[in-house]
Image 1 (cartoon, rainbow, N blue to C red):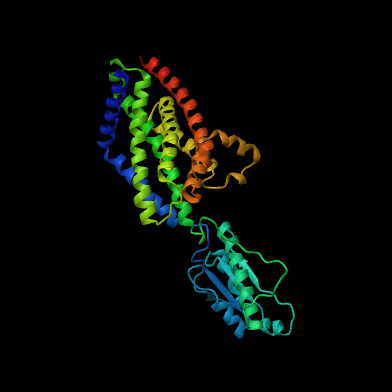
Image 2: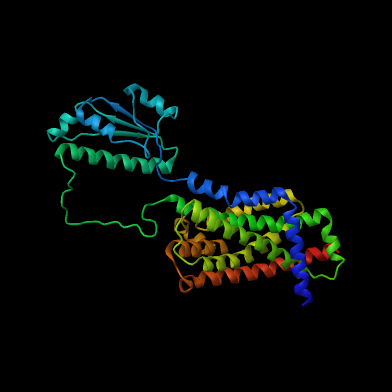
Amino acid sequence: MGRASNILWLGLKELRSLASDPVLVAFILYAFTLAIISQARGVKSEVNNASLAFIDEDQSQLSKELIAAFYPPRFQHPQIIATGEAAAALDRGRYMFIVAIPPRFEFDLRRGRPAEVQVDVDATAMMQASIGAGYIKNILIDRVNLFIHRTDAKQKLPLRVVIRKAFNPNGDASWFGAIVALVNQITTLTVVLTGAALIREREHGTIEHLLTLPLTPFEIAMSKVWANGLVILTAVAASMYVVVRTLLDVPIAGSLPLFFLGVVLYLFFATALGLYLGTISRSMAQFALLIILVIIVLQLLSGGSTPVESQPLWMQRLTLLLPSRHFVAFSQAIIFRGAGIETVWIQFLAVAAIGLVFFAFSIGQFRKSIAVTK
């Protein structure tokens, strides 16, 4: 009972210390509101409002229909430029795509002769350039077929391919972006709060005061774990209900209590990581540098930003040791696919096991640090 009471009161001290820091409170509010909204709505991989120009050397009815086939929101209204302006326009970044329609284009098509349309692409924005080039190709082919045959009926083929998008029928990137942003903020803020609290006590001399009391390193560490974990869990719940579901209108297919249970398991690892980084850091500046190195690796290899399958095979196996990969996997399964505990229990078990091992290691390092301080 005495140990539990010590952990409780030390944790309440952590909460009061956090509440007295308006900058840190404002940072938490921003991270779970505006940061998620901006990443969900501002960062998109699909083509949106792409700049487009046409070189129309044919000046035919067909070329005018092709130009009229492109309009917002995928593309800006096309601009007409001269042949000699293409290279300079691409060099200056004025247009992402330039479509050149050659002379006698409609004349050749009507007589069954082969005709070509040249599409110059500024591939500095590689993903959007690749997707946009595919859009342009499909639009041009459809409009030419419609003009020549005067019907949009497709020729019957022996094979019919039917594509159905599961879990995100409209391909809305904001759904995926919102959840990835929330997961990333959980990792970042948990590590930052826990490690910063430990370093702040060391810099202010509070840790020496704690060492004069009948407290164990385990009690000091656990107080930081539950206090900072509670702050993050509360922020995640508020962000999920207010920002993700209400403002961004992201549908939640699975059980939110199950998702929050997974968050609690992951917070156990993230707070232990923050405790470890705060233990080995000698200043807040050193801690900030370590945060950059560790958090970027965790986020890039988790499968949230890029699929795990796109990584080398040896790295895919290595990421199985990262709780962030399992956290992203079961978060997406629960939220998007409506998975239950019978589907994600393996990821839950992996996060709990890795978190427990790392927590024991962090406590050992923290105990050694306390012994040196004494």
